[in-house]
Length: 497
Ligand code: NAD
Image (cartoon, rainbow, N blue to C red; front, side, top):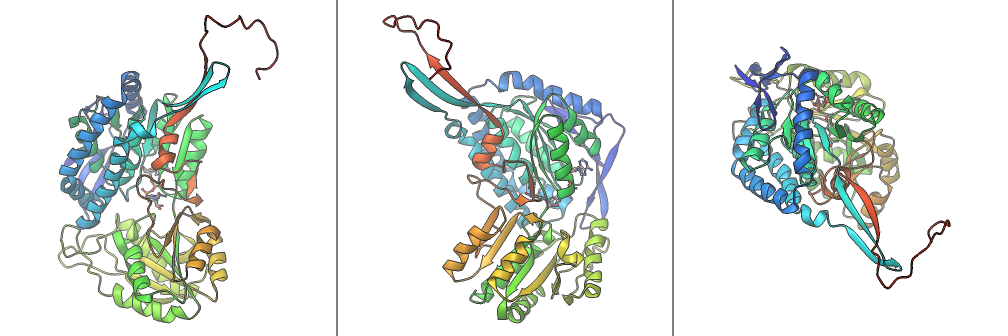
């Protein structure tokens, strides 16, 4: 069986804790790989390698850093297929979707290639007689990144390219459910010329995470995962004096107004709800239908959902793959089986679905629940599977009130032809990312990604300008050079004016 080991100090380092976790191919249900789970001593080793590398990388020139990043970009581009294949083998998403994930991660590497522009400081001359003031930004030191299973390449790439471009060194703790892509990303970085220890991959579970959160040499923590763990990471890392950004879970709503193009809205709802089997933090999991549109919209969604082909991600004909684990599949199924008792109309029931020749895979079909109430479990919880809830309201105002009452505020979308309503929505909705006739409004790399409320703990969104700010700290330098023509300033105990 294949073993995934740590990548520390520019080389593969075998796990020594004696603990391993199983990695399963979700399409077959077979355990294909074991991943090393780090001990606290291994956490120390990874942080020490990053700390040592920081001594030179932190003061390296911008041109030296960007030269590596440009080569890295080219290598990632050349290895897209290989990275995507690893994602499909361990996560289960279909290959085309995995390629999309790699492309969106690559965007942040491209952003990092332009760090020279982002790190330009500010200078004000002659703020007082012969006094200049400049603002500069400097790296933090060793930064840790803790990432979820659902984007095993993209989410790490939201973090480390910008962090290292800013001069930090990085310890990545990927999800133990699909760990292989992270190692390939690190190996390619080494091939691109990234010095040893600048990017380290430490595999593990709670032991490794807690070790990083408490480690005195870790200056900052970036986290992406579920809300309960994000809340814990934020509280724990903050208590240890670290800068922390912790992105959590979601329940993303799509508001459909009566004047919307219902075919476009149904296409968007199906793509956004069932893509990647609903295992996306930006998946649409609740459609809020306003006024008279609900019956027609539900019929159109059902018609489209019925045609989706479910199968292994390696089959180019498959549109939707399996869920990450059998336990998760069973949990997702429980929301569908429990929905009718809580008042929902089960329009499509995906439970019990199997795929011929892959009977042990973690399969579930597409489910569509109509007339869902806001106090039902299917609405309140983040299901993280291919289950779309439809809620019905009378007016735009009712829809926005319902959506703003959600504790989550990650992404959201409005479907309408009414520019006034769309504009109002942008201002009134309590979410970090808004789509207008765009169902999954994941910002491009040069804007930042992040939610509100229980979808993000901390002040900084990821990547874009917020990413650069998160991975650097500001310093302001006030300078006066003596001029031989000046009279001595003399002693003055007053506060400088
Ligand atoms: P998760 O919270 O279970 O795990 C995320 C990471 O935290 C993993 O590396 C895991 O090893 C670690 N972890 C898990 N339990 C821990 C504990 N008790 N103590 C310390 N560390 C722990 O999340 P997941 O199931 O891997 O990913 C799915 C979740 O991530 C969903 O809720 C999804 O919405 C969310 N997500 C959010 C975003 C976003 O941008 N907001 C993006 C992707 C995924």
